Length: 181
Image 1 (cartoon, rainbow, N blue to C red):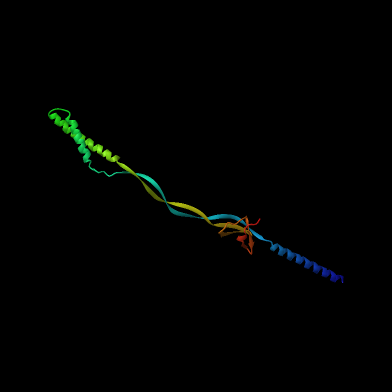
Image 2: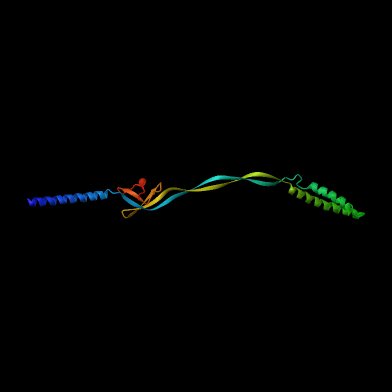
């Protein structure tokens, strides 16, 4: 009888030990598993948008000459020069001085009319436009590297994971619940 009690006790002890071992294995396996996030690098995309940039500019214009060959200035200068030249000299010298005065006055009148035409200007305001490009850089995703069970894995995500680790289920990261302590 003692022998059967001993055998029964041993079997009971083995059963209890086995149950404890299975329970410990199952409870150890049911604890949440995590992968450590090693790096998170943004994936960026640069875009350029052209647009018009306009501003007002004051522009000075020269009026078109009414007398392009400056005939009026030459003629008036020649008349005035001839009259002044006629005041000098006597006899045939007077004729020479009148002619010289007319030539000199004609040249001077031509030059004066040219300078007057150069200075005959008007100003307008004009709009000047040029195309400029606005550059914008935006993050379109994230390259994530994580270590799970001693191996490094990579993933491309739309959103940046929060925290330093991600929970794992059946060997797959659960990014929607990324985070944890």
